[in-house]
Figure (cartoon, rainbow, N blue to C red):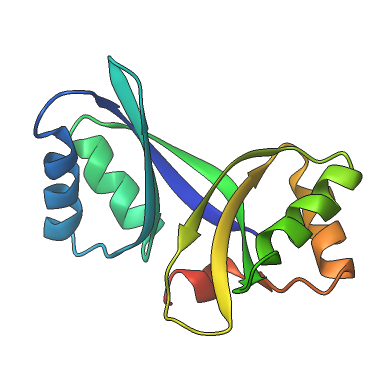
Length: 143
C-alpha cells in the first residue's frame, strides 16, 4: 500500500530544475506530482513519476544524486476539515508527518495527499482502520 517517490538533490542555481525536467522529458518519463524544498545552497526535488526505474537511470546517468523513498498516497475529503481529520488521527497515534504535498488528479470529492511518515506501516494501518483510502503506487503512477 505504499508508493515510491524519487528525490533529486540539486544545487540551488539557475537552470538546474530545467535540466532535470529535460532529462525526464527526453527519457519519456511523465511527472505526476512534485514538491521542491530549498536552502540557500541546495534543494531537494521530490517526484512521483510514471516510471521510477527509467527516471532514476536517466538522472543518475546525467550525474544527479537520486534516492527512492517510500511514501503513502491517501485520499482526503475535499472539504473544510478533511485534512485535519487525518492529521488528528495520526497525532493521536503518535505518528509524525515528516512532510507532505498535494497531488492533483482532477477536481472532485477528494484530494490526493502524498505523505512521508516516521512510522509508515503504523500510519497505513491507522488510516485504513479509520476508512481513509490508500492509493497503491501502481494506480498512483498512472493517475
